[in-house]
Length: 322
Ligand SMILES: Nc1ncnc2c1ncn2[C@@H]1O[C@H](COP(=O)(O)OP(=O)(O)O)[C@@H](O)[C@H]1O
Ligand SMILES: [Mg+2]
Figure 1 (cartoon, helix red, strand yellow):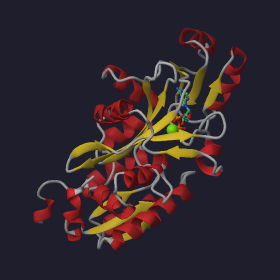
Figure 2 (figure 1 turned 90 degrees about the vertical axis):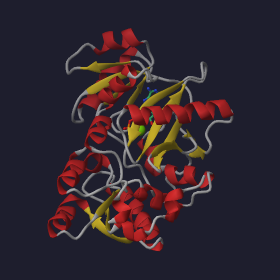
Figure 3 (figure 1 turned 180 degrees about the horizontal axis):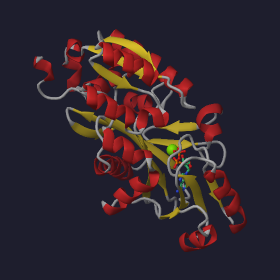
Figure 4 (figure 1 turned 135 degrees about the horizontal axis):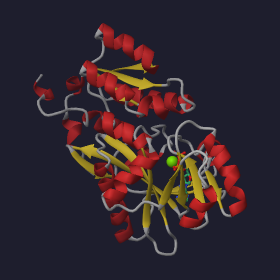
């Protein structure tokens, strides 16, 4: 893959804050991603520096010591539209989707509603109001189902439910998290993730990554603790399927009003081979062993070039002449 943006003069970016850390449960992963990005941008000649958390960023914004932000703060804090709103108010360009796309995709229920309305495939689901009859909802969808909080991450609060007897426990667990709940048809088959990056203003899918956890599903342990999860990239052996999943990722990105870059997650029904959209991560991991760098590497884009391309996605026409 050729990156026209690699010809861009690093001076165009001005002073770039790599926003990382914060107070979320994903702080450590974010710091790891952030230091990688900082290193990469510095090596590419960008005037970049680290900023830990929103409060520290606010100080830079007030002091006018920052021109642009590479946001890699994970969790609600960095991905729910609030940070994006602050940056809009200060007129500072930033990586990742804007206020609307960030806020929308933080909410799984409403993201799925948008995808459904756009004719995109996502597992059938029911929004579960507190106290609502979960047994009736499960019956309507048909077991097995997945119960999850609408606004969490890292697989916390998510339960795979095979039998009616497990439903109450699943709802109890999901209810301990903030916000609404959903119950979703379980898709039985492999899991995939597809990075989408806006290259020269055009949302472009990188190769898919197939995720094969050692256990039954991609839970918190498989994501952050175990090192026996297998990642295969490109994820699909079949070229037509690979083209289909990439096309769906770009359509899902556009339908949700996303910009700059994100990572779109899928499940595939092993019998029908249909892909289903699960969710989007708008500030996905960028550690050396994260998924997005893996996919970029497969198309010959190294980590430094990838970071540079994501940063370049914040440059609007006319910025270069400043
Ligand atoms: N409808 C589904 N069918 C099968 N597995 C699912 C489904 N939804 C989620 N999962 C599994 O649960 C994991 C976490 O769910 P996800 O919706 O991605 O929430 P989170 O924001 O916590 O990552 C997924 O990575 C996948 O392994
Ligand atoms: Mg997920």
